Length: 135
Image (tube, rainbow, N blue to C red):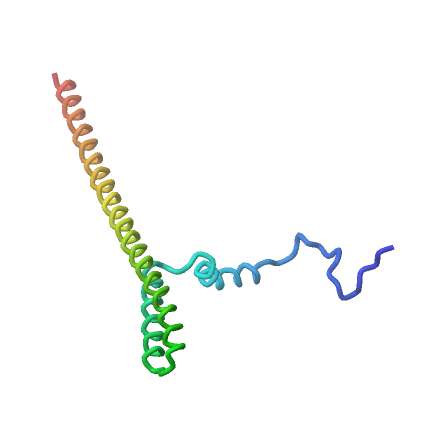
């Protein structure tokens, strides 16, 4: 017959388990996990790639070994391509953000105009109703 160790929590009331420590830990780690899994924002990607390029160019310029310079040049070529892609993603993200803001502004103005029209209709109907009651 199975007998759990006296140090295990086997068979303990699992319904009363407190998960608050786990949820607070996940809340603290969520931004880091998001960046790790899905990458940072396009602006962060551009800045990080620029910093990597600057550091690698400094390393390349500081060495006299041609083999290392060629290796650095290969890495720089990759980083320049990544920078171009990151800049394109940043431009697309900014365009999307601008379009979203424009759409929200149009929706807000349309909603306010609809409210003004409804108020005017109600006022006009009340005026006709009062006129009809007087007559």
